[in-house]
Length: 534
Image 1 (cartoon, rainbow, N blue to C red):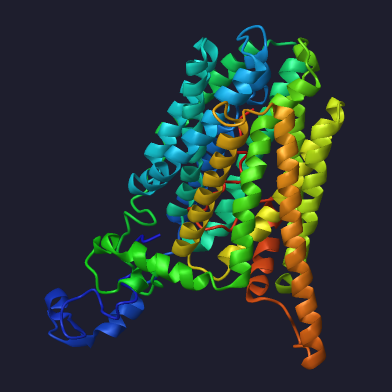
Image 2 (image 1 turned 135 degrees about the vertical axis):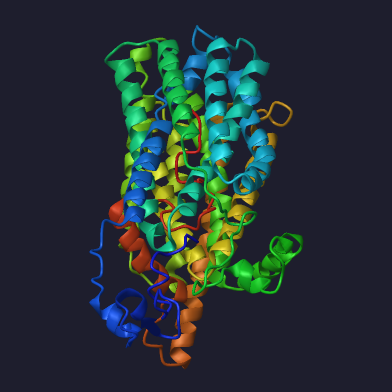
């Protein structure tokens, strides 16, 4: 990106000799004759093209980034943090974990999300990845050495930094390659990340169930692996450009970005003073699109409850199946199965061919109804295997809609506006999640036990289902009414569907990507790595 191309001389139209298109041969042979330079140039034999150094460099970069992304996910003790805190080694009470320790994760994530987001771009990614590695090491040091509730609350603060810093990896990969390679690079990096999460969960479960290792030993192994990934982060290449704060000059022939079009005559760096205002104004104009509004609202309301369930489900498992036998705890297996199912459902989303302008709300309503049923099953069952299964299916249902929402939102926006939309959506979801945590979970609010919290989440999803179903019925009735008064157009596809679904099918063909084709600063996390801690 922005790198000077080789062979500029060849396309300049000038011979590499002085003079007005002629070369004197008298100096060489004493003949004093003049021959056209074109005849001299015809005798030159073009050099054989060698291997492309940029391609080789790109392949090395892909391998190292994917290896780092894989190693950074190897935390086999993560699925067992909650039983570790509730076990005899730490001996915290369930009320302390539910109402005092875990709520800090939501509060601190809200506090660090925007600063880390801005620092990621301003510092050009690599320092934030190093910060993430240091924060992971701090999390596991506090887990192993901490003894009090404030120590664990500080641990949650560092964990929130690691969550906010995940945007650095998803953004970093786009800053080092050309736009033509975005799609392939996103697929490779996402594959490495998901494989790392899956391997980490399976490894942790095998070490606990088959190897019989105590949770503390598992955490020491996690600490060693995280120290290794921190060392790998130190050798990452730091890009020269970023999306907002470190924009290089636009190359001749390259298409201008959204920021360049908004401020074509500004001095370098001057856009920082006012471009964000114009971007927000343009974003307001784009919000007139019904599909953009719909999927943004889905992103905010559903992801807020989704992550709350992911945060607290490990506490619920301890309530449903309280045991001191560590070999009978299968949290890692449940996390591995949910990761695998999420990858499969995300991949399958690329093959859904429907008229999203007409059926989107009905599809969202159906998925939300399934989520509500699964949350109620987790709340009501006393069978740990049913609880595990309900959670796996719940995550799979959510991950099915994530890539669809990503591309429906991104299809008609520039990458800068996409980054802004996903950032705003993630921030609003975090605010909503924090408010729910303060009211429902925190001891300063209702301080409900985890079982009662899941009943609240069931009602929450039930209300969302009613809202989506009502909107779907209105859309269908309006369509039926219009079809009786006017001939139906040859195709009712939305512009978003026409642009998105071919991309979705191609991108998810490489791997089930939650945000494979999302813009460089898409939250996702959010995404799509599992955001939550056990």
